[in-house]
Length: 285
Image (cartoon, rainbow, N blue to C red; front, side, top):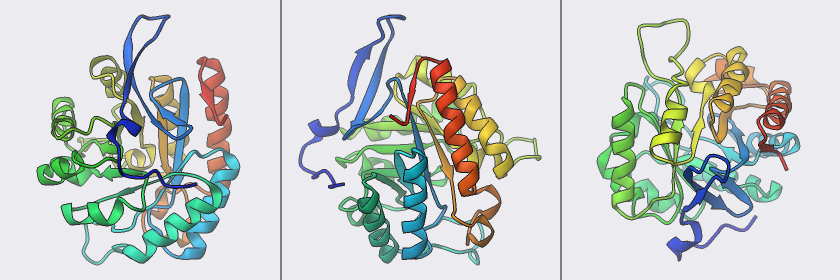
């Protein structure tokens, strides 16, 4: 797909719609034929990190086949340990864009600092602010000046209002194309990587009217829990799901335990389609 030019904020400006049934207003963000915040359930999937040109092309092809509407992939990886795989940098971003163009899908990838925004904008369709950077205020202000939509992940210890204020840092700079993401928070519970706060999804939808998606991969840290958590998020009103997926999870260089296999990704897509029908929504059309 051709990447939209960065020349007009109006191209991606959110539009306030009114739901005739509930008389509630909410924002929709359009990206070509893809829409966040309406009746459509958007599935975003891809590897934790872009590891090679062959790996990301195979990932993109498999994802497209099952109904994924946006590809995710890490270029520079923020890791807790300095000895963990840190990503391959700008060559990986070029491979990512090339693979996405081959399957005609948009891409989202995380920027970690202010300097990377200029590097990423010509390549990605959506800029992601990761959990560790939710309160990196310089970075929030910089992406607020971007003409790309922003996917803002909740910080791992962030309250509801801290997430809202992080979004406002972006909006105050002029960019209101913000998609919020619940990805789990750190609590005393220790049987999952994080605790998935499903209640924040309807709260965000009701109060701030922005599109909201969920990341059950980072919430659980366990591929066997990803599908149930994804379905619970959609049942709570989420506009989309973002999951980590790898053609061969056992060989993944990062977050292998939480990465879905191709078979699991297909199962997720089938179940999302069934749930969408039950809820009067759309998936994979």
